[in-house]
Length: 335
Picture (cartoon, rainbow, N blue to C red):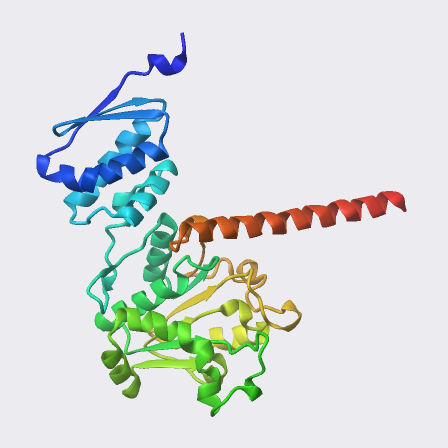
């Protein structure tokens, strides 16, 4: 007898008819999305009882259970949350433990939360460590979440100021040919930090905080010779520091400060590839209150195509390494 035919249907009783619209979506759009993602599974809904049959019935029922917990905790289901929930359940993770973690309320009124299990680990690492390195590809929320944690620490009076810094790397354009004074020339390099900041604090409030020196956005070169006490310091795009700059930055940390260093090892623009991020983890491993968090394409929260592009580039790089190793082996055998 076919093994799939012996699998008994799994039933789930939803605790309250009021949850059904949010669970199934308008015109059953969430139900249809789940059926499309699990094509070998049949889902039957009657009243507040859901019956699921098929080889992945247990997974689908667990997904519905997680969605119910999200709704009970006040989080509405939308297309993005549903996609993230499906991915997490498929990876044996709990969306209800991730998507309901509040960091702060944004300037637009929304709640800023981690969107993946990896992002949650990152946020928790920032909370418990003095120095946290967030390493991963574009779109994983490294900088955005770091700025959110900085604003939270400032609001909770855990720090007195926020320092946001980036290396100004001439990636294809020479600074001397850009118009304006020095700050005008380096402003484009700092713009992503401003964008993240304005997501958390309204423009007028952010400008007031900058005028009072509570928030400082500056290029990495401006950190030399300083000691930063009682500050939340974020070094963004750390892959574009030199080893000397990284050492300089890490030794600026004073009492009562917290540091987050973000970077993407696949986007190094420094000359000769001399990145201050390379080989740093083995050297610093074992230091108390310092942690590296590695994010991956699974933590990308932009359009799903971004994850696919990152995976394609990763596979291509891995194939290049295999080809280079094979060519080296052939040369050795030929000699």
